[in-house]
Image 1 (cartoon, one colour):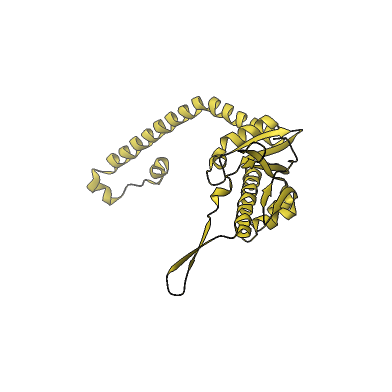
Image 2 (cartoon, rainbow, N blue to C red; image 1 turned 90 degrees about the vertical axis):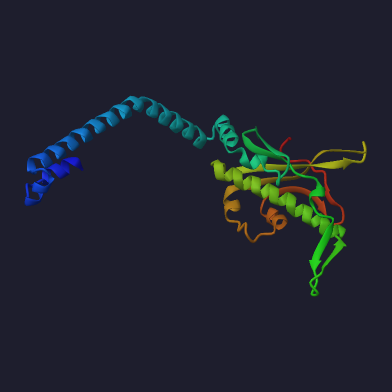
Length: 236
């Protein structure tokens, strides 16, 4: 810009009020010199930093190629960098990932059925609120939808950050073991999610539990009893 100003400079009558054409030209030449000095300094800084920038780019490019090639360790590193969805208390107490025979397996510790409210509240025409105990069937169906939603979210988040064609999700809940009288971590849902089918879902309008019918699913659920223990597709 300074060089362009100097090249366009032509002495004029108005320069008399600025100390003369010579003084104006001298200022433009000084401005050009300062601009060149600043450009040279910027160039030196960029040149000195180029090897580091190049190494960082080469490292990132190599890592991206490993991810695209399906390198298991690279995938685990990506998951660790994007672990915000694994720490979301709304989906459960945690998500862990591992590979089983080359298959990516997400194991989700979902909340137990206490996450579902025991009562239903309704607004009456009078403007008052009514409250009644939720039926067993409604309660169990709501918990089923919650668990199904968790599985769908984990699969969707995984497909978003990794070029995986499929991801296996197993949901584990604390359930009462009638033999011991204590709650133990029990697999209740196992799903093989496939990318082409998943990306065609309209997640805004699906019923979570019904959507699982699009995938290979292991689930023992009865409206009157809720979830039962299952044998997951992959070991947890």
